[in-house]
Structure formats: structure tokens, C-alpha cells
Image 1 (tube, one colour):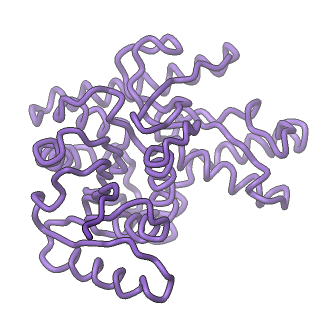
Image 2 (cartoon, one colour; image 1 turned 45 degrees about the vertical axis):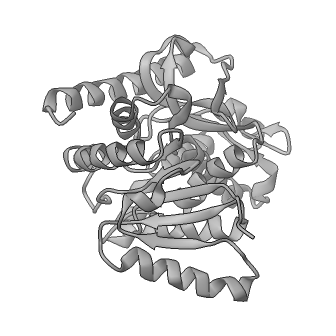
Image 3 (cartoon, helix red, strand yellow; image 1 turned 180 degrees about the horizontal axis):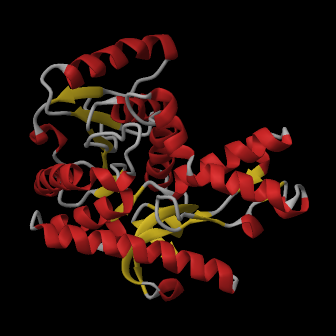
Length: 315
């Protein structure tokens, strides 16, 4: 008897892609295709995951491939392809190489899976979502980036460490671009419903905000040979799960703003409702003048980066 389950393809079988495939296999929400241009690597990792299934009691089918044809008909495609950051590099330093990679990947994915929802993980994140949207020609609801989910998770982790409380008690919002000017919203970040501004002094809140902004760089500096992969993969999987299960879950994600928050034609991290159609709604929450200014500054930097890409002649 043939099976009919959602098909989720992960492009790029490096640390982020392989970790994404591992977590997706464990959730059993669909079958996974792990694709990479390096011969043997995705096949080997997929086989290793299949051999782990009996130990964990999972029945997800994981297929490794070097051929986009095997990803055809995917419901969701997670794009992790690209070079990672190294010490001293900003996310923006990656722009030329990763723009060319994401362009080529998106062209192939759009041909193979014209109805798929795309989730980008490659840095510089916001700019790469812009590239994928332009190259694919997909509607804005089906092209998004994993940024706010990761940045919010980092903020939550640091708050939990600071207050010695369960991460399950914490809700956090981090908006804006995935970079040094992201906008963690302390007012909307709560522990068991209590704003963190009521639980710690202002200087500690500010210190955690700054650590969140530099969270990726902190890991790059420690690893010395690459960048974070467990938390980025988990964040992408959270988005996949919300879509596959039609959860209508509110997750900060990089999406196309067309007037929301006064931001025009720019991909930036905003609170969105994710469901089976992809981005089903952008929520507009009340921001203070200072928060709105910070969000606009962050969005303007993303827009400048996208304009730079357009001027490079790659697209």
C-alpha cells in the first residue's frame, strides 16, 4: 500500500540541513528529502538517519540525493545552502557568494516544486529571502525566512538562564532584520505572563537584548570554524510544523511588508500567523515611538542590502 504523506525537502546537507532533517524525521510529519551537490554526503546522512529510526521508533522516510528531480512535488522546501560565517565576518560579508547560491537553488526548486512553501535559513537572511522571492516568482505568502523564530529563541534562552525559570514559561518577540539592529521587544516579553521589565532591572534587560543581537556572533567566535546549527535548524522546524499541522501559530518570521508598520516592499522580521497556506496574517501590534523607530532603522538596512544585491547584476 502506497503512502501519501507531506513531502519536505531540505536543500543543503551541512550542519544546519542535516540537523533539520534529523528533527523533522523525529516529528514524523512527513517524508524528507535531503539534497546537496556534494556526491554521497546527503545519501550517507540520510541512510544514517534511516538506520536510527528503529532505535527511536520513527517511520519517516529520509532520502538523500544530488538531483533536484527527487525533490519534485515538495510541500515545503527549507533552503540552508550557502557558506557559513567565520570569525570576523558579518552576515553581510556573505552576500555575494550566498546570493549566487540561493539564486541557483531557488531556480531549481521553483521548477521542481512550483506549489511549495519556501523557508530560507541562509545568511544574510532577510536579503536571501528577497532573492528567493524575486527568483521564484512565488506569492509572498509562500516565501519566508527563519530569523525571528531563532532570535526570539535566543532571547528566551538568555532570560531563562538569567531568571532560572523554565523556557516554557517565557514568550518573547524579536522583530526587525536578522542582524545587529534586530528589535527585541522587552515590553512584550513575559515570564508566566509577567513582563520581564517587572522581573529584572533595566540594565540586565538591556544586557540580554545586546547578547541576543550578538547571539550568532558569540557562537561563531566559540566554534572558530563555522556558525550555529542546532538552534537555527530547530527554528526552521518549528515553522515547518506550524505549516504542516495548520497550527495558526504566531511566530516572528521574515516576511514581505507592504505597508505594515509603515514599512514598504521590504522583507523583515514581523509577528506572523503560520498555517497551511504559509504566511496567513501579519499581526500589527502597538509599538512605542522608540520601538517603531528601531524597527524602521532595521528595515532600512535590509532595504539597502537588497538594493546592493540588485546592483550587483547577479539577479
